[in-house]
Image: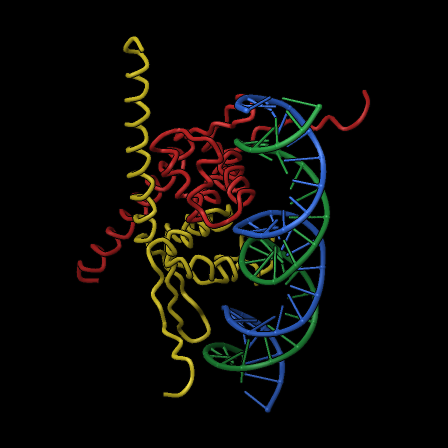
Amino acid sequence: MSTAPTKARRPRKEDRLDLVFTALANRTRRALLARLGRAPAKITDLAAPYEMSFPAVSKHIRVLERAGLVNRAVDGRVHRCSLDTAPLQEAERWLAFYRVLWDEKLEALARHLEDGE
Amino acid sequence: MSTAPTKARRPRKEDRLDLVFTALANRTRRALLARLGRAPAKITDLAAPYEMSFPAVSKHIRVLERAGLVNRAVDGRVHRCSLDTAPLQEAERWLAFYRVLWDEKLEALARHLEDGE
DNA sequence: TGAAATGTAAACCGATTGGTTTTATATTAT
DNA sequence: ATAATATAAAACCAATCGGTTTACATTTCA
């Protein structure tokens, strides 16, 4: 064998959560998702409403792509982006699972405090 | 009037979402939340399981605090941290709202494509 | 009166983020 | 062939992140 294998590793669930929450942690990117929720769009159109430079928006889209939230279909010179909600579901499940769990804990605690002690 | 008023501005909803998603975008911080979900804890105990330095964990907790996810009660020299799930609900609502909306859109699109055209 | 415990603050570091401008590269239209 | 279009890539920048170490301030305990 020659040099380093550079195994194309699929990120673990934890890492994907990092990527998804990171992607969501920016207002511009959330707005891009909202825009893509209405319909797929090419990058020029996505960038048009913003005051920031085109490359800036292009980079935001790459962040969304890395998180698996956006797919890109290249057709000639135009790149058409579309939304993928699957990673959102994953994040949503994480949030819902823990939030509910914790809320139950907190309610139990509150009840316990009410009951005399 | 004297100098700059330094209005103590409550962050807009959008900004708070930034803070919450940013706070969630790190595995250590998610683990800290999980730990606090079991019971409130002082910072020493929170930091104990980690290999990283104490100040590092202390900083993570500050990030959680800034996002409103953790409250701190100082009693003498010990700082007792507890979980606040309210900002999580906000993030969860954001996710659920858009994800459902988008999924409906995508389903409608799929149906449309199936119907002949 | 110390010394130990519990934390923050500050200074530093390399990597990443979010932006810029400039340059390069295909692809399409004239 | 040339020009316009759609995009990436690269080089740069200041700010933030995630971590370190060292130093400091308080509070408790012996």
